Image (cartoon, rainbow over all chains, first blue to last red; front, side):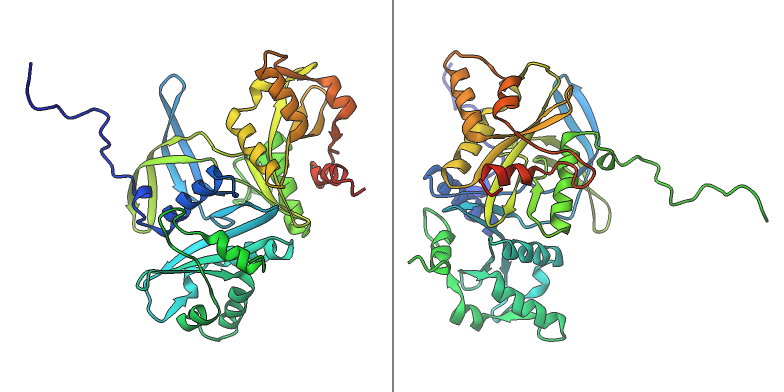
Length: 191
Length: 191
């Protein structure tokens, strides 16, 4: 019988945000996937820690979690391996035009990045300025200076000018989306 | 009023399994905590990946996950940083007396450890023999030989004798519980 095509069952109901460059996190995940498939680096996002309280088994071999809560992570979101080096970072976005508020960074992230830095890893933040559509790699040692200053009664943010003048720009393109390893090459003086 | 001491309110109702050496995973987590607090290494277990489907908000600022499912991890359970080196591993236990079945290892773990190995990281398994109460570090290159053999129609397990003869023993003690970095030092020829 002819007629209008029926709605395909396989049609996705939910738009996959990871393909639209909607968030900094999904851009980094797409970039990591590019690095992995092109054999450039092995970097993954860690799963969000969740405390599972109750699980039911509606079918054999199928566990359904019915009660769970988000937990505070004890580390950063991303880590991995590039050119034999351990790298570790978190990604932050700001809507500000003038400064990146340090309230965006949690103390446990500072402690963790400091540990990484002390043990010879490459620790940093990726900071996205939404209004300018600009992305920077902020090395932990620079972040640490502003963090310590803020804890000693100083300013609670990092001025945009600091990023403009001293930051390492991360190029935004189609593939890879956010080529932050280029910025790491600059950081390591390998360019 | 004198009498028998009443039950203290702070008495824990639930026994903390992490303190009893009940599972290999909890022993490794306790060891990682020891390494971290003693400034030896920065190694963490990754959270179990969970796909969240529904969240309710029974109270302000309190998210309760009401429907979620376990997802298959794309990497191993543990990674981190030791002496400037990236390390990555999974932990496995067997009840066998004679051989470690390769069915305990998933293909995505082999692929991931192979990537880590190729990019200059230290990739391995920690294998626990429950019956003997023995623990070994199995370097990825050894695991790979047996894995490839099994994929080519060969044996589907690694004999206990191989561990006895070629394995690197991990000492079990009170603190740290499972000092696997000692085994890595041997692997790196630093002893």
